[in-house]
Amino acid sequence: MSRRTTFEWHGDDIERKVRKAAAVGVQKTMTECVRYAKDNHEFKNRTAHLEGSVSIVNPASSSGSGPVWGRWGSASIVYAAFIEFGTSLRRAFPFLRPAAAVVYPKLAENIADAYRRQK
Image (cartoon, rainbow, N blue to C red; front, side, top):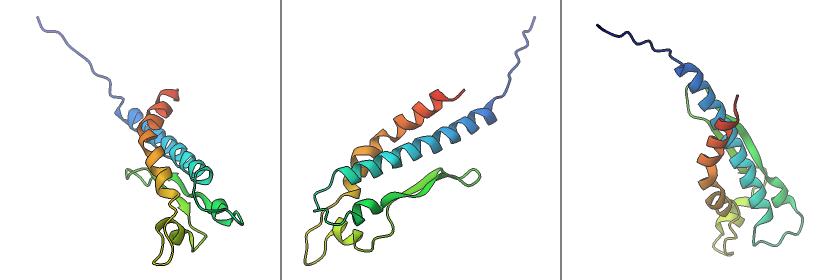
């Protein structure tokens, strides 16, 4: 006597949920990086232009089956790189890299949390 086992495939639904959770998790991580960079820096804030320029440049997205990605930072202020990396005349005052170092380790947790919250 043999038993017949059936299998119902839900892989497409799971993939859709994972991609949605990844986008939500990446977006949340970038948002936290922006907030951290604005609130935690050593440079003297005289005009608030540099601080105000830190934002999400490209929201979290993916194309087809490609990776989920986004871009954050200071895209509108040319001297942001001079502050972040320093020059031959001035020392660096990093504010973007430290934000990434603190917040990026939370990315997997943010994605997992977004996955659990889905219906």
